[in-house]
Length: 356
Image (cartoon, rainbow, N blue to C red; front, side, top):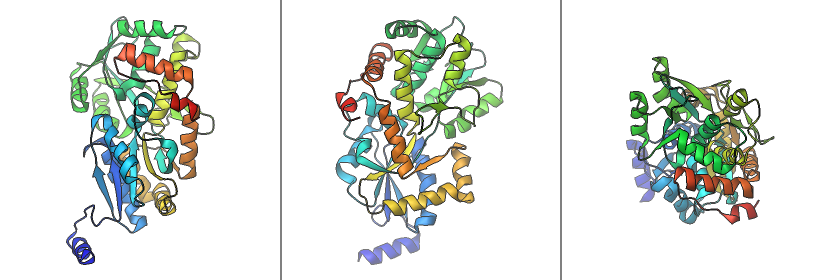
């Protein structure tokens, strides 16, 4: 009977989780950035898998419940793949979660970047406060803005005090509200991933209503350092900091910034399976086709820009590089800044340091 139903579904053009060959679990609602990315990648991978992929959305606070659900109840299913995003990486550092990247194998990940724009009528280095939408997803931006506005040579507590004086951390805005507020000039700055930046911010820049401010750079797996983004050259945060202060950022807060931006942007979009999944090689082969076939490259780059894939063992190595960035000082400074500056409830996780 199932075979008959499956055949009918294919003939009629239906795709459901009951008849799909693979399921991609996305920990957010349909239409979100990760959902759109997953659909693009799934569409391209289907061409080389010769099997269907259905997207299953499991939404919840800060996109944690979906990842926890996959980790606890779904990862042992050989046909279920987890699609994670950078916010999951931030939560991994700051919050009590069930999931643990060390327990998975990478199918592949995109080491992306986040770009920050500033309103045309606002000088972020002047005496006026810079208003920016608050949230756990904006932690790297909040720290970067603090470093850029407050300069070099401060203690963590001094940076916290400076943040309170010079940054207006506007709470309660969702993505759509934040974008509209920036367009109206009600927020001085905003940030987006590459796909969303092209869609929502670049048109505002093209009209002369805003300009590029900074980006966080691309994490290099081999060195653990961040390099410039060819899509938005010459505005990496570290370069702007050096130009203003004639010294590199070397504070405890910078170590916390490097840690959190690496976990968010270094795994901005990723595909995971349980260790030992027998379909891993097949999934990796399909993703390699996506990364090397001109038609698929064009389809993906149209949405996100020119960013390299790290596939299979390269993705695992990248994950391992991220784990090496976790130090007691960087982690404790991140927790302190989250709690005392941002008002974000964060916890220090001894287990992260212990498992390095």
